[in-house]
Image (cartoon, rainbow, N blue to C red; front, side):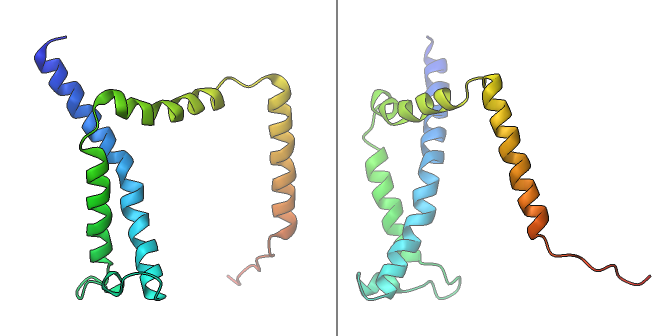
Length: 127
């Protein structure tokens, strides 16, 4: 593999890694903020940004944690994190057998029938 191909591949891996860090970076600060707001964590963490109302301190904390976890990893270590998810995806996306399709269709029909029974009637508006 040429050097430029290696650089491109490394850049793609970094984009994927940063993308995989997005969910914890977005959700975890809210948990820290709520915990601190309840008095169960550091009070400094419970402060919201004065202009935007976001938990800026907790976002910085979580970003630092995620960055420190991701920065020393090499590709083989990253692969160990990614491989179980890819394997699970492969297992769960195989072509279904005909019996599986029949069960899925029956379950869908049952769910739709239940929704139709539970849906409130919409009155026609006078024209």
